[in-house]
Length: 349
Image (tube, rainbow, N blue to C red):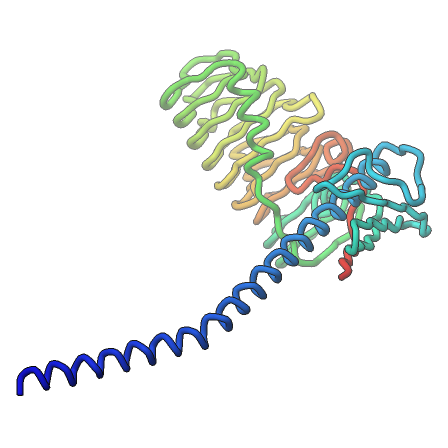
């Protein structure tokens, strides 16, 4: 009886094996066909991407020719070398204020319209006073230039404006790259580690300070180059800054009297993340910039250049005069280099 049971189980195992083999014989061709199809599709996709990248290189080649005014427009010219082992044919046509670029790599065609942009600074910096929030000018303030604001503009008579009020949303671009320029200038003059305290009249700058800058009472500090402070600046109300050179603080900048300050075009008084406060009289020729904070004039002021901040407040007897040389003289945050800009981009197939 035992032999019979074993024999019966052996027959069942053989039958099961044959069934599995039969199913495998039926399914393997399907799996192989599917794998072959996927392989062909992958190769087609890779080839299409190579063509697209090659045609895109043709557009870049045309932009280079345009930027260098190198015998443009032109028709059906090949790039100097093969791209992805394939020839690329490029045509540039003049269409009024635009140029049409056609780049062909095998079966892929890119049509692109480009326009020349002169570059320069954003329009939001064109103004004597520019605020992304509110501006409050107390009595006897005079402004020569436009006033741009994103919030409310409050003025107390008598008030004189030789320019235009331009309301509208204002968003300042990041300032890190802009501030880095002044950090490099300060580093060139040396580094002071920690908080620097000044208690007597002296010359200062260029200098990079890793901490705060504190100026005690009765000091006349003559700035002779860029000062960059990783912390805050606090100047006693009985002290004074003179001379020329940019002043940049990562934190707040509490400044006191400034006499005939900033005679060189390109000087900047800037707080990267904080506020700027002029505690006493300010006679300044500079761009005053606090994109994330307030700019406050507690006493009389005479500012030539531009005042740009999140919030601006001025007491009486302040004169603000816009100077276009500060706008045109150096790149501001969001500055765009001149060149050809792509306006449309169509890939076929």
